[in-house]
Length: 305
Image (cartoon, rainbow, N blue to C red; front, side, top):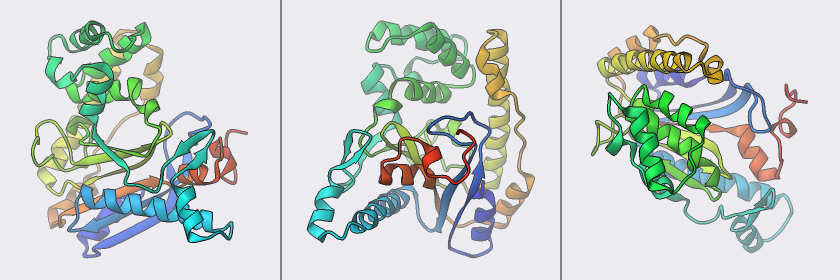
């Protein structure tokens, strides 16, 4: 990704930087995923994740307006269509302020369980799965239970992220900023100003059940950053070990190593101002704006034919 190099530019004194470039992820191929995709990454000094929410919302709304103006219609008609854009049969309101909800609130509303309240070091996975079944708001399949238990091997924060992906994410149709993600899932984000032990100042934007953007107040403490990187490596190993013990097919998805970026930590030691950053998937945004059902329809040379 372009992220760490752009942050080094901020350390060097450039207070607002962005780059549109190709990014590679070691993920599977589907109508929503391509291993190589286009993203825009933006970093602004003396800003936080609330500023990035406003910028992201404005960027998407103005992009949609420009697409609608290609039909040579009045501004009043553009505004009307923006409030009822169609994507694959779904009516989306891109005109009004996007919804904001914390990840914990969204999971609690859907499942009736807050992993931070029920998780423990000794019975993390079992206690979370049992709490879900006791609440009775969602059906917990055997495969769900395996995934939740693997996540719980790391922390309550990982359990929260797992429940969100399993039970909440696909139902977020209208544009929604999911805020205050677990600190354990956010190795580059600043701790939350009110709940620093649990959450990070981070959000993800979801539209039609898929992630469109990710942003956070940047972590600028080099000591904390090194500890986070080390914790990320340890949690990755713990989850991989748990999946191996359960002989899970998901093990191959984690068959890679994580290393600490020493050069980035060194750059932070020189001093980085309070900064916020955002990354947005350009291909997915284009899919949304032109009503394309598959990512292969908006990239030149897709791996999925």
